[in-house]
Length: 246
Length: 216
Image 1 (cartoon, helix red, strand yellow):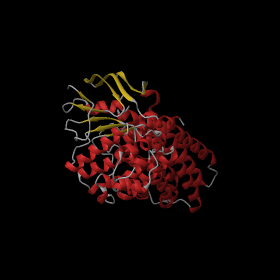
Image 2: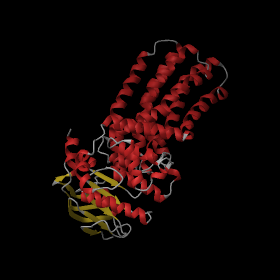
Image 3: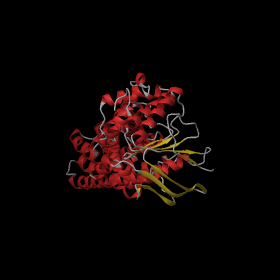
Image 4: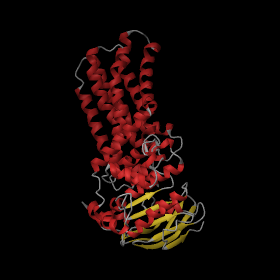
């Protein structure tokens, strides 16, 4: 259909039948992902917040606890993972909030596309913008906690897998608290208990990696959690978003 | 597959049967019913808070009525919501636009999620609604009327058989209202149906087949 001289009769046939080719689910999901990435790079402030938080928290420990490297090394796994968990929680509030306000979620729900796929794409973008950078920042934080350079690849690997699970579990919490005005505290109450297994296995795998032993067992459990989250969390988030739109 | 097939069949009619809906203690929809044929426009009127938006959201399946059904071609739309959704376009009174994207990017992502859309189509639609000049500007910098025009460009790009419009003429100047009128008239002429909620006078080009007044 062209802009000039719209002739209703001529466009009638094309417009109601052949003129609309439905975008395949994957293409739609890819668009949702690239839209969120584009938006995130337009407002970088929001992007930097959780990362700065992570860096600050991990750097406060050497100051507060003790500069003694052996003691820092002992608490490093816990510090890294608690900081990562809280940083990802900080980022969660932005996951669906803006889209709920401006009606984007509504349009997604009414697009005829699978809302589950679209929310999965949104969560993937969220992970690329917070989870992955957190994992990439982990070496810096680990070094400041006196961890040997040899342990760094293991720490990053564990963090990459763990943040996938954290982002997806967080998506459920973010979707469930969409209807509320000030949801920060509730979001934490909902999300943190669900994230405990990730914290436990993540910290354990990191501890083994720092100790220089094989961390494959807790990493596998962590990966299993991530797979479980990938398969189930988008479904739960989509159901929660539908309820919030009512 | 199913989704594709059902798109090809235009909406013959939309039917609402005795819709009853409560919001908390408030009985908003008190047995609303109507039948809409192809090429017809239904105008929903009523005072502020009478439930116009609620009715539209119920019709498009976002809200579930306590009683009653919405039927398309005699079939309950809840039986296959994705197919129903891909055959309708709902435009709320707030345009679903991102302040940090340009008008053109907004349209590209918004419409692209639903169907394949070429860049030239976007430009043509924006030019048609009189927003061609601001297509590369961030929506943040646009006026309320210009945003509304960008939303209308989305409407021009969606060839959905059923349009559900909430106050489509707000914030628009006389020329913008003409554009709404032309778009709606075109939709009716090609056999689509429109449900429009507004307490304003609709542009003269739109032939309103039925008026439904909601009592508050």
